[in-house]
Amino acid sequence: MARPAAGGVTGLCVLSLLPVQPFAQSRDETGGRRTEITIGQNLEFSDNPDFVADGDSQLVSLTSLGLTHERRTTIDALVFRIGGDFELGTGDLDGSAFQDPFLVLSFDRDVRHSRLGLSVQYSETDVSNSDTSGLIDLSDDVLGSDVGTRQNLTLEISGATGVDAPIGADFDIRRDQLRYSDTTDTSLLDEDTNTLEGGVTFRFSPRLSLRSFVQYTDRDVNGPGGVDRETTILGATLDAEISDILSGNLTLSYDEIEFLEPNPSTVDGLSISGGLTRLTSNGSWGLTFSSDVGESGRRDQVSLRRDLELKSGSLGLSFGATHTEGLSTDPLYGIDWTRDLARGSISLSLDQSVTSDALATEQIDTSLSLGVTQEVTDLSSLSLDASLRDSNELGAAGIDSRRIDVSLTYRRELERDWDMVGGYRYSHSTQDGSADRDSNTIFIGLERSLVWN
Image 1 (cartoon, rainbow, N blue to C red):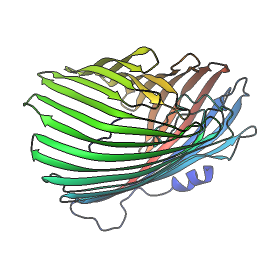
Image 2 (image 1 turned 120 degrees about the vertical axis):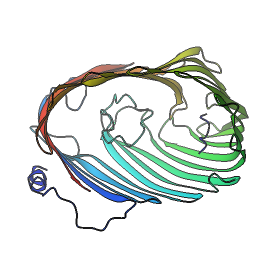
Image 3 (image 1 turned 180 degrees about the vertical axis):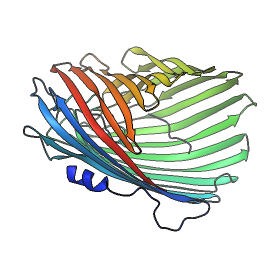
C-alpha cells in the first residue's frame, strides 16, 4: 500500500486564417492570460491500425484540434484544455470518426495560509494506444494489448489551511472512474474508486513536523473476477531535517483492507515506511524502506538510490528488492540519465514498480524508454523515441505481457507557426495465451500553433 503523500479538414482551413495578434482584453499587472490553438493535419498509412492479430491495412486522414486557455494571477490559476482527433479512412472505422477526446479543467487558489484546488479530467483512447493526451495514469492495461475503448474520468477537490503555520489541516477528495467498451480481455474491468483523505500537521520547528492522517479508499470493480475492497489507514508521518545535509521521514500506520466480493475477508496490521536522504557535493544518496499490509499479503520493499550531477547532464541509479508474502523476492532497478549534446539531447530511463490490479493480483511493471533529439539545421530536427513496457504477474498462474514501441520523427519549420512533420512508428505486443500483434505506420502532415498572450 502506497503511503499517502504529505502534502476536421474544414476546421483546419478556417482556423488557419485567424490572425496572430493579442486579444483585446484587460490584464492583471501581476498575472496574465494565454490562449493556444493547435492544429494538425496528418496522412497516415498503417498495415494494422487497429493493432489486432492479422489486421488489415488502411490509409487514414487525421485532423487534430486542441485548445488551451490559462489565466494566472498572484493568488489563483485557471487552466482549461480540450481537444481530439477527427479521423477519415479508406475502410470501415471501428467506433466513431471522432477519436481520443480529452478535457481538463482545473482551478487553484492560494491566499496567504490557505489553499483550494478543483479539477476535472476526462480522456477517451483506444486500448491499443497510449493516452495521447497525457492526462490519465494508466495501470492495469499499461501495455495496450487489446482492442476497444478506454474512458477515464477524474474529479478532485483538495484544500489546506494553516499552511506554514504551527498547526495546519488539509483534505483531499477524489473519484476515479474507468470504463471499457468493445474489449475482449476479461481482465479489463470497469472500476470506480473513491478516496477521502484528511490530516493535521504540527510544525514544532522549521526542521521538525508531524502529520497525523486518515485515509479511506473504496474500490468497486464491476465484472467477473473483480475484487471489491475498502481500505482504511490511520497513521502519522514524522519529517525531520537532522542536519544541513541529512534529512529523513518515518510513517507508522494501522491499515485495514476489507474484501467485499466475491470472497468477504479482512486483513489488517501495522505498516511502516521511511527514508533517509544525504546531500553530497555532486548529488545525493537516498535510502527508502517499507513494510505494508497489502492486498495479496504483507509487502516488504527496500531501495538505495544515488543521484549525480554530471558536467553535461545528470544520472540517477537505484537498486532494491520487493517481497510479498507467499511469493518470491524480486529485484527492482531504476535509471534516470540525461545528457546534453552539441545540438540536441539524449535521455534514458528505467522504472520498476509493484502494483495490484483489478483482480487483486500482484504484478511488477517495468518501463524502459530512450529519447534522442538532434537538430539537423536551424529549421529542422530529428527525434527517436523507443520504449519497452513489461508486466510480470507474480505467482505460478501469472499472465505476462510486453510491448515495444519505436518512433522516428522528422520536423521542419516551414514558416512562422507552421511545421511539417513526418516519420515512422512500429509497435509489437506479446501476451501469454494470445497471438502477437505488430503494426507499422508511416505518417506525414502539417502542424500549426496559434498563441495569444
